[in-house]
Image (tube, rainbow, N blue to C red):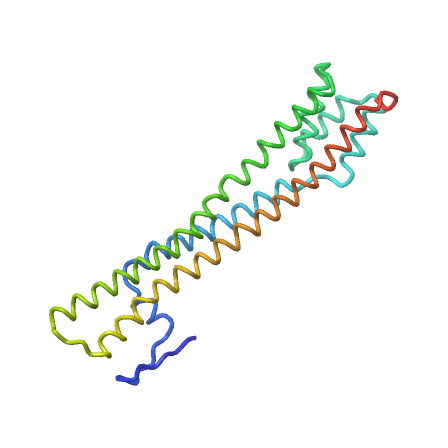
Length: 219
């Protein structure tokens, strides 16, 4: 617990006390904090689901195709979770229709784009929060400073105690906004890194599968 002590009152202030003195601008900042936390957890779980795939899935599909078991391979991929099973399933379905390998590749690319776009689109909100939260904090501080000088103009009292006492309370909003912005910024780039890592993995598996299909003696 954080404690501060004022020079005039010698009164200890807890972190909670400081937050309560931040003013109404802290309310939208707090909302943005909870929204950022929710988005981070929800997207992390969604990415975890998308990353699932049975070990050796691509090899299993290739062996099934060599054995002439296209239907079984298609059904197996359909029952699995994750981006890779969805992508392979799309390619196998296209093969079942007698399409060319180029059509198979296009089908797989389309499904991959849709799957990962669903993951990355909500991340834009985290990017917005990382920019909006600090600006809200600065707005709160500026409004507080304006109010301080307005009160001084009414009372004709420019005591350092009055100015300093009001300023430290109003700058709490700037601090809160920066903290929320940093958390949202970090969450955004961390999730983006995980998405890029998964995209690379799926692209390598898809390329391996397509390379296999282009070998006439194998299929």
